[in-house]
Length: 178
Image (tube, rainbow, N blue to C red; front, side, top):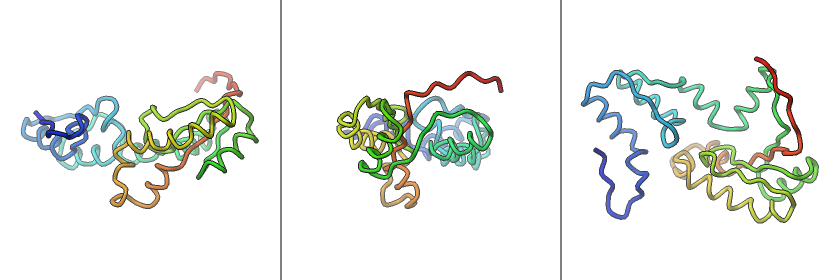
């Protein structure tokens, strides 16, 4: 059991990699399923489980890292010849407005890292984009353990947590058999 400390977030125990791995080791677990959300897309968790000699029922650390940053996952999909909707990275609100004007509304904004799917916002106008941009960035930082590490994580990861991707919602991609 992983107790919640008074005043601490209830999510805390679900994000405690060392404690979870210690419990798995103490119970002689041979395989860990990462579940959904929390640590399911956390490369450090996958690495810690594997380093403890326990099987990890999930993708490799490299795949988790590549797919965790939405703009990197999109680049991989494009290189693989998969259809993707138009999208561009925006470093700040001014750039986001410029991109959205070029793409035409509606657009979807999504943090490049973090958010757990909760940071996506559909914007039908420039006013909606302006009022939603900073809130979506903040939500992504709060929802992602990778974005909460501020001074501890790499400059690249901190940048990814504050970078938003805009996607066109007015484009339909025909289904394709892979």
